[in-house]
Length: 123
Length: 222
Image (cartoon, rainbow over all chains, first blue to last red; front, side, top):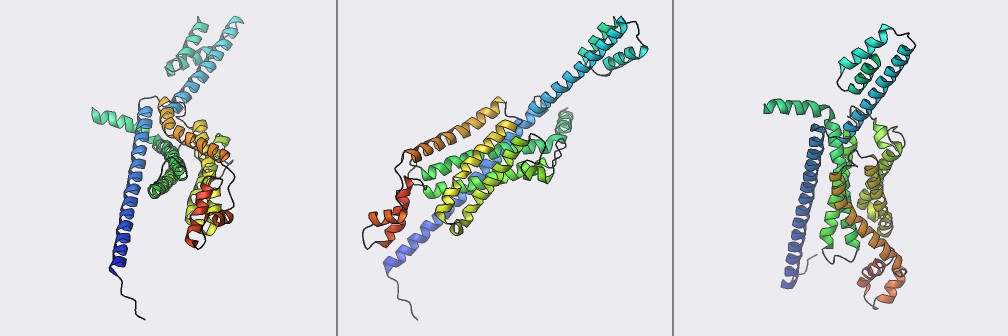
């Protein structure tokens, strides 16, 4: 089985097709590389933004949870202060409530509101 | 001095490293998927003429990069010291107790994007027209992902996040709306074989493969 000899036109067409295919493959590789680069650059940028936000103390989740904690602490200490003041009003104050109030005020600066509430109740 | 501040930063960020990675990967996934939706809509639309092959390759690369970013987004959460999610929590909808609805939306969006995206490689088995019809739901999965990021994302309220997302999401939404309006106002598609018969001159069987696509482009099956 012998194949017919190809004409010059056919050979040209094949060469042209091969060139076009090669060019398309090159373009495909270039696009894939660009997209990979874009994805990595976007990741680096997003990570940096989120990292700087966290390191500078402006992270939305951590700020929100810190606020929640502070609010809970102040609520707890104010309710403790209210109970101690009512107890003082009834002249049944024990040393324990004062000790608790003092220790909470000296333990952390975060509960400064609570500490002042305790001081008020003490005075 | 610099070493000390670097140490302090490392100590402060260290426990949150995987969480930060997950957040960054989620943002990247949303941006890439938005770009992918844009390019996908441009392939079938009338805005860009020509360059179909380049657009198709770009769409494919963006979709694969989106899936990779989503895998990183989910897998890094497994090491998060605050949530401690299990594999089921990040892979099965309605299993996680943390913001169940938003989390489930994200999980469903991921699986839908994975199935609808990767099915491209089996489209000859599925049937090209059927695959195209199915592939339209990828836009819905993208919208679910967008809702997940806005509803549950830690940075959802931040100006930089909203600006970054708007840059990528608004063009995609506009293209999607324009495509839907196009589909709604376009005349009913002629059934493909009939259209081919009516549009193809006799004795040109090769033209049959071209004409139905041209007819359906204005109609339903894009």
